[in-house]
Length: 245
Image 1: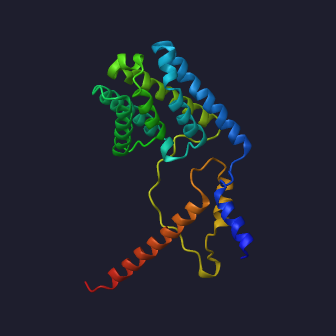
Image 2: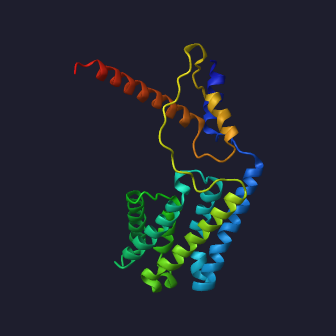
Image 3: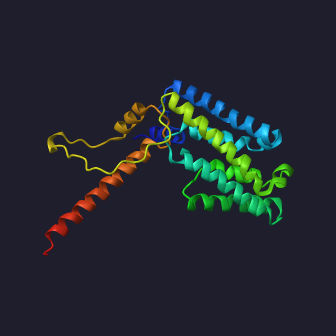
């Protein structure tokens, strides 16, 4: 490869990969995200005040992108949003009771929320953003104390209901179906076996149609590692069978 082609290849690696989804899917996700944020904002604004509702606007918008655009991802499932918002409200309120400087409060709320989300298996990045918003010491938020759980969970539940309705009504299954029991794949005859290539993975992503939060390169690496583990397991089973009883 010539130096010029090497330079072009390196520059190309810096560019984002092409989306494997149709513009209609972009429009569907955008419309759903807008409607999904509108409902919880109206509900929280009517029950708890406009300022409190707007204080959660950023995290709600980020959650909407995940729930409507990447709804098949692990970070977008119902427990992820409900659990993460619950963690953020509890941790941020508890840290606020220590009356530390604003920066220290924000950092502790962020770190504590991340640890709690990981422990409860509800990792959802907007939950960390919500913890930072709540830790800023907004007077209306501080006055509620642990009562902030009510508007926070109402906002999360409202967004989740919108995602459940809109995604399924527009042909996108949500939430993600639980994984079925693992099955052994039938092995093709040697004469028709073919290795999976990056081009095959790219084509599969295009056929999938929805946003997938993984690149073809990541999928290729996952397939290679899976094949290696499968070979190791098969060899271990063969040796176990040959060992004298």
